[in-house]
Length: 123
Image (cartoon, rainbow, N blue to C red; front, side):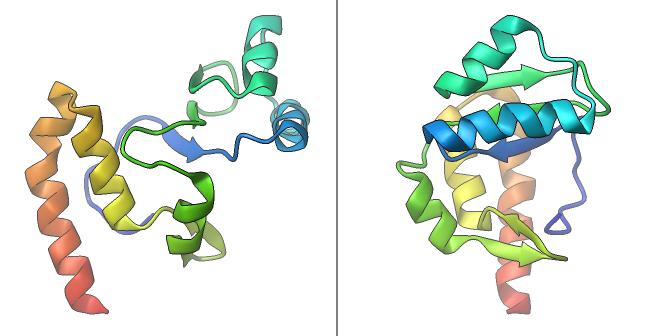
């Protein structure tokens, strides 16, 4: 949503791990057409660190505890708005990719860092 030309086949959503929020999320997912398995609903309600959904209108990764980001509240303060949608700040995205240290993140980091530099130059 920030304009980064590299895409994946799903969307990552950083979710605030708060009981009533998690409960509303389960209902919202049902309303969107996700066919949650009982176990998935339990994991979402308890705010499991990572829940992958592939049984709805699109693939979605729910992330309650992203690597490299300590607190939801801090990331929320740094968010940017893109066409009415809250989006993680590019520096939080970079930090998370660096902290995850997965091979695919290592491979995409040079492009992401270059994009971050370009994006910061646009401000």
